[in-house]
Image (cartoon, rainbow, N blue to C red):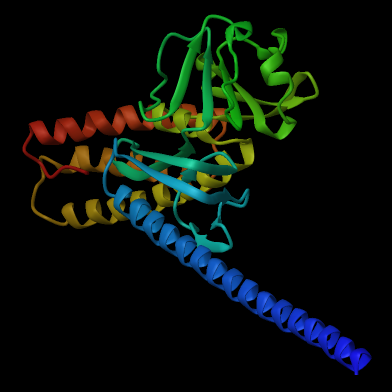
Length: 327
């Protein structure tokens, strides 16, 4: 009898352990499912909020926004077609968004209008407060907004990284001649990038960290302050170029629309205005041709600058003569 009772007690304990363990697994699974659903719901909410922000910024400039990102990272793809909020993918196929590849902790955004000289597009800039923008030997702000983490240092050796997950070094001089400080050397190569702005040539040279030094990573060209800021925000030349392709495509469409506008205006009985309108038509045709190839080159930057100045002067003359303006 004692032996039978001992066996029953052991069986009861084994049974209780199995049942308890089963309930523990069930509760753990339910908890994980709830947590996963809550995370996905948060990711959807952030994605919708960002979409609303980006949409509103397309109609305004000098607009600054910020958003805390608890436990959510935002990844911008090099193809410039989508960004990911956690596992949630969102399209930015037609929207020029210049950014580092990864944004986390606190997102800050900014927008500027791009005028050629008419409003061709709005350029959107996105980064994180945890990304350090270090202006080395540069006293001016370069058009950068106040809501980013920017620091001016006389020399690169004076910079100390304060636990920023990415560091962007900005130079006028050749950065290859300067040694990286210890706090930057110990960072992962993918988290340190640099650019050299060559104002005389409207050129930006990109660099990336490799070991304890910087190496060349490509060159792009900018047309004005908004596109220079775009190059500063873009982590690499590919992100800059594919987003500028979107802006140039929009420029091409806008120039075609304005050409149609001039065609309609010149059908009216306004002989005193026709010569100026025809000159403006010629300049718009030049913009339309230049923007067919969406890549910004040194020659194209110069051509767009000259066309912009001429078209702006023509538009002013049309206004003085009380003629219909081009834009």
